[in-house]
Amino acid sequence: MGLMKPLRTVGITGYGAYVPRYRLAGQEVSELWTEGNVVSPVREKAVPGLDEDVATMSMEAARNAIVRASYADPAFDPSRLGAVWVGSESHPYAVKPTSTIVAEAIGATPYTQAADWQFACKAGTEAIQAAIGFVGSGMAEYAMAIGMDAAQGRPGDALEYTAGAGGAAFVIGPAENALVEVEGSLSFVTDTPDFWRRQYEKFPEHAGRFTGEPAYFHHITESVTALFREMNLSARDFAYAVFHQPNVKFPLKVGESLGFTRQQMLTGLLVNEIGNTYAGSSVIGLTAILDIAQPGDRVLLASFGSGAGSDAFCLRVKKVAAVKAAWTTREYIQRRVPVDYARYSRLKGNYKFN
Image 1 (cartoon, rainbow, N blue to C red):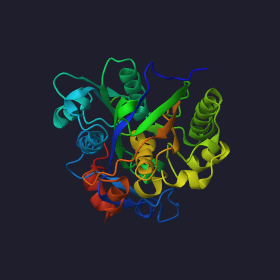
Image 2 (cartoon, one colour; image 1 turned 45 degrees about the vertical axis):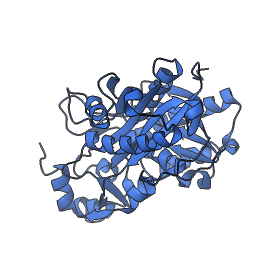
Image 3 (cartoon, rainbow, N blue to C red; image 1 turned 135 degrees about the vertical axis):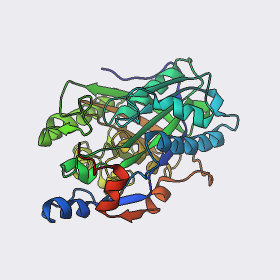
Image 4 (cartoon, one colour; image 1 turned 120 degrees about the vertical axis):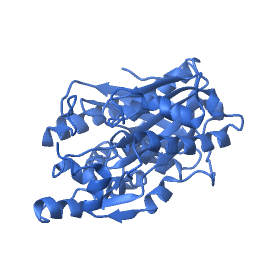
């Protein structure tokens, strides 16, 4: 059917999140463009600072992941990373890898593999899948996978309400040193053009409601259902579940259709507070879960990427990394600084309409 398990068991040895401090309320967008007649699908979203982009935010998340990896394996060092992979749809350069910048900053260079990944909002989980295979095959002792975005939305477009910034980094390593064991994963993809951005275009285009049933719901449902069938599991076997979060309604609806309760999903549901962080959306929700999960808890992670596809993972927590030197996801969310639309436009450069 497509269940993916590496030759040797691997897991998440370290993880870390990053969320910028600035927040724009959805009501600000509605007031400017519709005189308040549109109800925002999220309460507020995270906005990068003037000196922040996918590279700098990835560095912050990576450093948190390294701190936790050093707790899980005291002998861990960034120089042992056989790969540093960054998944995003808003890399700062069209031709110049984000991954080499991050690898250099965290001390993983020069003897490492580096690459940037793209698959819309599941670019981060694509990198995780590859890292699992890289470590599981024995080609690398450890690998780092990052999902991060400073998402763009055209001024006045529906995406502007939700397109936030942030993401997460993961150190994948041998299961014996891991905080979380990867029990299995499965991917489901089709050519479903619900969302795209052509070269030289600044903002993405989308097919409106078409992105719902044939894209988001179909692909997540198929990947998770197949994973359940292959592993003889159901929603009752999981303590937590996290899905890609373009808004509040979609992940709750797809989760409930798969048998999950809202209680299982609420810990990882962050979109109302930080917006849709695209490649960082599902993976940053996972970090919020891992911050509070206990040994033995099983976690479902299911991403979605437009174009379209879904990666589903079955994870089991082995031990807790209670490390004071690493920020929790909730701490990043709570250090919010509200901004109005004028300051948001300056931070994001949205006053340049061409």
